[in-house]
Length: 288
Image (cartoon, rainbow, N blue to C red; front, side):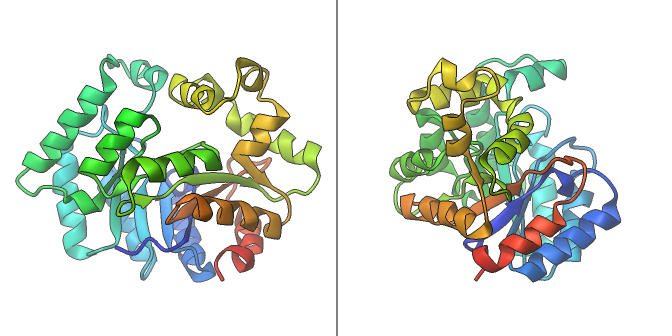
């Protein structure tokens, strides 16, 4: 499975008009983005959705970033993975994660011992009638214990909402032979105040999620950095903003720190509209 050097992560590739999503996926592939990531969402239509994106593209890898171990039954996921990969070999990457306590409990599920749950989930994927191969699944790992699981039991790690320094830590944790594929939020805006103003509303929910906050604190950020929408220092570490060339430099920093693949998430003032203009503007600098 070839993820390529640069991809796109977009929640809009999971929700909304199916035809619009298919057209967006086809254009992203034409622009040179080689892997398209989307959040798993509800389980009921996940296979149909993945097939729609695969059918709209020719060679791009379609990846979940991520399906939640609490709401996507492992036996069903394994069966769906097998069916999809029979029709589209080497083009579907199953991204798996533990989600967040508030999201899981909001769905009426008890969020207890998430790493134990993740291990048992992987056990069930292995024990399914058609197991999900280790090199066709990737874990959204942040902390050291989860990164060890990513190293031992998956293709690698897909960290989200983390700075370049975490990419370096991820590479050291999983070793030279595993994939490190971080997500990177970007704002195509050169004015610092405007760029940060666009970024902060998108960052807000993650700055209230303990999984992210604990890792940011571990990386040396402070409670003051995390409070009140995030300090300028934190915003600038997490969000690549500026002209395409400046954003491209941040992607290069991830690669220099050990990333094999980086998927950009474009942030705009309109969270419900495809950022097609920005995807097009960035492509020459990122996909060459």
